[in-house]
Length: 322
Image 1 (cartoon, rainbow, N blue to C red):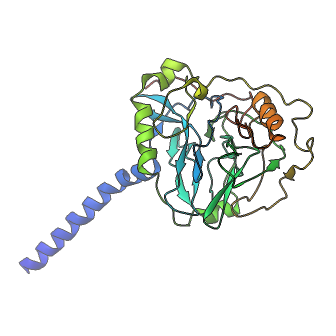
Image 2 (image 1 turned 180 degrees about the horizontal axis):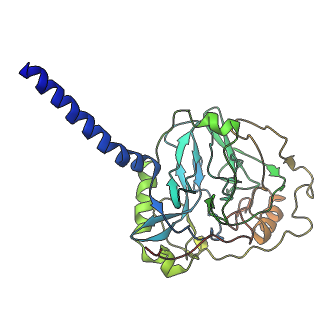
Image 3 (image 1 turned 180 degrees about the vertical axis):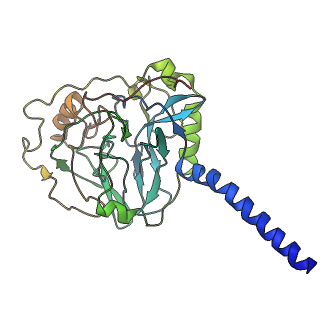
């Protein structure tokens, strides 16, 4: 009888421990929550791809030490062949903004409808694709030196949606979109967490005061880097203002460009092309002007801006009030 009581007591203790651990584990899985939304996405120039096999991961606003800080976009190697990056995003719910971490997977899933640019238009990814064991780059939206990287193609994406720089989903002024059917399916696929270099990249940005929103007021001096943790060189400077597209810069104005619009279910994860593949404006004009030469020293030259023209702003750029 005494043994039965001991077993029963131990069972209750274990159940209590599991119940108390539940919220903590959920918090680790979902991410940090904040009462004030992140600043708008800054406009920045994408660095050239450092070599074959690197995949672009866009910059984002992270949170630490009671304020937001910018984590520059960067080129990273996928943890294994065939994997693509789904960016993280801030989503509003229950009166707070919750960070949903990014991950690697066979398909690009839901990332809040945020237009991070450079192929991440808000739905899916059009900046590149795997063909067998080789990753190919779409030079219409990614910046590669075609004298070094030959596994490229060009697909121009038609802009059907107003472009903005909003950096969060839901809430006042946020992107009001929900996962589509395919994105919900992708949620159940096997996912791989950010690589060690990606984690170290974020930690390095957190330790740099210049990336804090209270210091840069939403305009970090370095918007992107060629490799994780390399925050130097003015070629990686943010604060490039985009100009409206001029005649000759729009999709369809150049012969030979393949066009994809919302009805095109092209390859793998491209479930819906809702926005124009970026960049817009001056960077786009330079990119498309150089494209005719093909293999110039500057490569294809695509990549000014965060993929977003001036539009709706995010909320807040400093410390939240508690």
